View 1 (tube, rainbow, N blue to C red):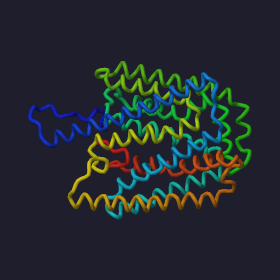
View 2 (cartoon, rainbow, N blue to C red; view 1 turned 30 degrees about the vertical axis):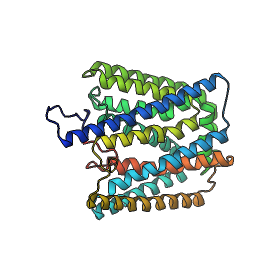
View 3 (cartoon, rainbow, N blue to C red; view 1 turned 60 degrees about the vertical axis):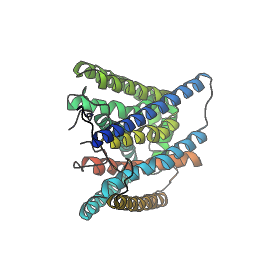
View 4 (cartoon, rainbow, N blue to C red; view 1 turned 45 degrees about the vertical axis):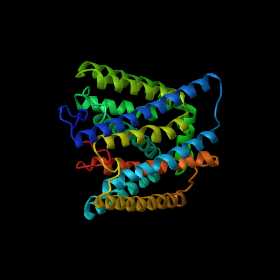
Length: 361
């Protein structure tokens, strides 16, 4: 597994390929800086609003969440799969889709059988997506020369992914618990009611455990770093993620994290690794045909995704979980996106080592 940044050419003789690689690296770095800048700006704005005592209603937060997750982030997830499938044999694509649908069916079955356990899996999926996907971005761009073992890589993924769900549980317990209850209520009303009595115990345990993981990750990275460049970037980004999810209300934080951080950085990874689907367009016919095929796959996936969403909305016993309309839509979409995110990770990445949606050579 690659743990080093893709090197720029060091020879004095420059070629067209060298120039193209430099251009891609520059584009990737621009996207990384954009992702950092957006989160810094949001964290600064909401820190100021919090100090001023200004709060946004749950309805407003819900609308921001849905715009970020549905309008901005969902298309990127579909494109990741479309781009991954267009140049594969039909037999591979058929197996890919079959496994994807099987994982969806199993997850839905789990939610009906034990919605509390299903909620736990949904939260875990979000953390794995943010964490493991984030480490692959580091592999391809700023480097992971400070991560020398599976333990360190696991800690890095845990810390980055944990910021997405564990930090909001600690910083915004009331909102987090309310929406967790709405999500469970979709399948079994009241199944999570007893959790309210243990909120403070859970918060304390999570704070201690997550804080220890962050500290251990940063210390081990510093001790074993081959030069401090990659460690320094990882440390600053880790602190930024923790700060962002601490000060930005959870619905807005999650809703904007995925398009403004996760998706932007996955595009940066793809550009840095030479994925032409994200690069500059070519005028040659094969590339145009490839884009046409990828677009057709994307359209089919889009129709299938929204068809599945409509089917689940109809099939679920209480699709809004008994919540007010906008909050209920957030609860429903959070369950839905978790259901499709599980195969996104397992089928799209872990079971596809030859390429995969988070491919790094």
